[in-house]
Length: 227
Ligand code: FES
Image 1 (cartoon, rainbow, N blue to C red):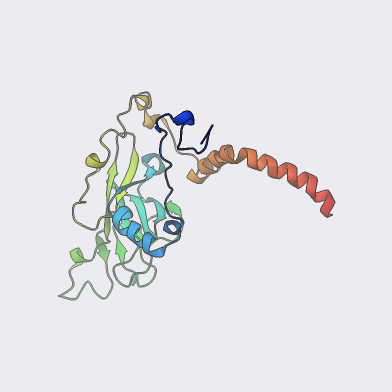
Image 2: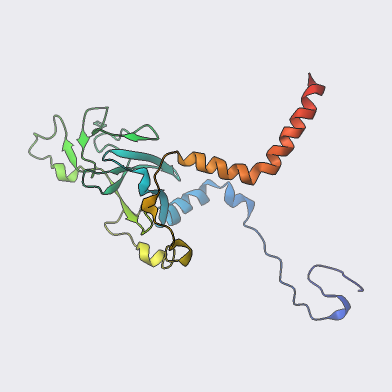
């Protein structure tokens, strides 16, 4: 064999010390429902997920509805200034409590049969149930989700259904917000005045700009020929 023969062999019989090629994940992993369900159980139900920022919640009742890996839940600011996260499921018959993507709640009431909850998730009123001797309001609050707010104000959730998540935030992110590049930011100086998806679209514009330019040119040159 002479000269360059393959990407794993050096010329002239020299020792082969090129890195081995790395295989990507099997394509089926991106499509498999079984793999998705495994990821929901092993990752999305156990790990900390960063979902928003405190600047998004200025007043009591401000809420944000999210669906992550098929889990529908919402964040809401309480009257005590805390930010709570709850599964978007009424404890009576499972009707969703919030339906818009975001907004401000005056009260957290289910539109189906009128059960209402405090922003911290405890049950406030359950018409026709609360008078029953066997009915305990304290057993019928919303299913709460663990939250953590890091020192920069980012809001994390953990959907672990245990009373205490198996993985504490500090264990998972020992140095995530201690990097020195963050030391010059005071997040309280920032005010939320737009939607997150505007930020995403702006970022995507940068990433996709060459393609958008190409499509623009292609459209301008192709349309006259099609008309
Ligand atoms: S499902 Fe919510 S009050 Fe009945």
